[in-house]
Image 1 (cartoon, rainbow, N blue to C red):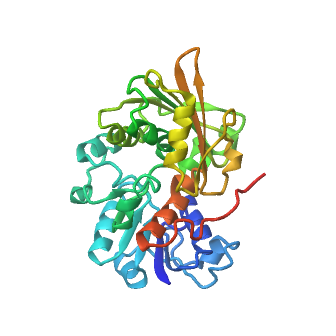
Image 2 (image 1 turned 90 degrees about the vertical axis):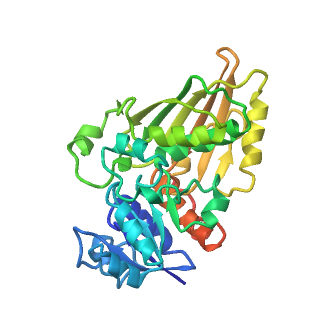
Image 3 (image 1 turned 120 degrees about the horizontal axis):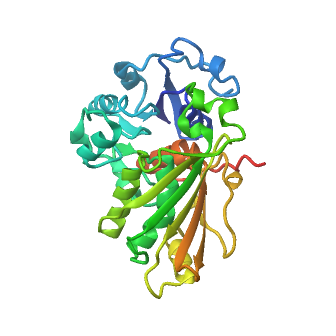
Length: 346
C-alpha cells in the first residue's frame, strides 16, 4: 500500500480525491490537510466518507506530510502549491499538483496570466503535463505531475490527435465551453450563490480566461507551430460538468470519416476516452461523477468547418479522477485502478 496525502482535502477536488482513493486497492490515505478545519475529524466534515473514520485534518505542514506520506496530491489554489511541491520533492515524495503552478512551461507566460511571481521556476522544465492519454510515457517516469485544468482537458482531448496528424489548419480555431458552478471552487462567492446562478447563463472572462495559454501551449506542441484560439467560457446553472464545442478548419480533402478514425485509433488503448458514432453527441449527464470523456464530431459541408463536442466531469476527468489516473501511471499500476465507477446518472 502506498501512503498518500491529500492537501486541501475539504475543497471539491479534495473531496473527489477522497471519494476515489477510498476505494483504491493500492492506496492508504494517511494524511489530510485543511487550514480552516484543522483539528476536526474528517468524518465530521464528510460523514458519508465512511471509510475514513479515524483521519484527523491537520494544518498543511510539509514536515508532517513528509513523515506520513509517500505521494502528495496538492488540491490547493495556484500560488500556494509551488513552494510546497518543491519542499515535498526535496523530502523524496512524488507530487501531483492540481493547481496551475506547473502547467505552463514559460515562466513569463505564467506570471503574465496569473499575476504572481513563480517561486520555483527551475521546476517548470521538469514538471510533466498530466494529460494522461497524451503523455503516458513521461508521466510513468515523473516525480512531479502538473494536472491539467478542466477546460483544457475537455478541449485538448479532441484536438491534439488531429493536430498531431496535421489534419487541421491553425487558423480560426474557436472553443466555446460551458461549466457547472463547482468549477469555481467551494469557497463562498456572491456571484455563485443560488439566487445569482439559478435561471441564468452567462459568458465570463471573455478573451482573458487563464486556461487560454495552457490550451495554446499544448496545441502548439502537438502541431509543432504556434496555435492561437478564441476561447470563451460560460457558467451554467448546474453543479458539475463541462461541455466544449469546438469549431475548426480541416485541411483540404480531410473527411469526417478520417477525422473520426484518427481519433478512434489514437484513443484505442484508452479506457476513459470514447469517440461516439456518427450523429451522436455527448451530454454532461453521461459522464457525471466518472473519469470518462465522450467526444462527438460532425463535418459541416456548407461552411467547411468540423465541429467537435466533448463532455467531461470537471471535478473528475477535469481534476481529481485524472489525478488518480496519473498516480496509477506513476506507480506502474493499471490506469483504471480505483476509477472504474459508473456515471452518477440520472
